[in-house]
Image (cartoon, rainbow, N blue to C red; front, side):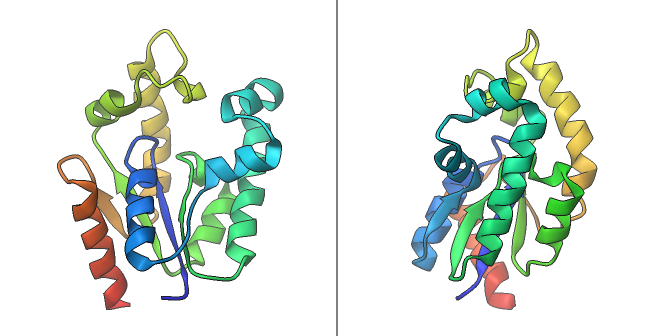
Length: 170
């Protein structure tokens, strides 16, 4: 395969774990868009949010996405959970042949990421309520993408098997 596979979905759905395993099985590089943003900014995502706000982070996210689309070579790219918030990003992703949206139930997500200090949007008095609000806002945007994969009750290897099966069909 000589194309890019993009993984999108809410934070905590398993994009990084699945992405790394998928890249290993495809024998290609894995890139976490959030890590790429941190490298180019020279600071962590919480620090970017603190200094530039969410808008500043989202601008950086779009630039990082554009960079990966235009950089040649096969790779697996895990996008941040909010990448779908900007219409420009959704348009870029809709032009790509291999976009998979990972999903999980709110209770699964909360168990996976509810206490993670590297999730600046969940640093509130009630992370569960914030997660529900964010998920509700983003669900219609994720739903624009046809290839949806639930990750609640599956090991990462099973999710990777499913993605590989879909890739073989194209």
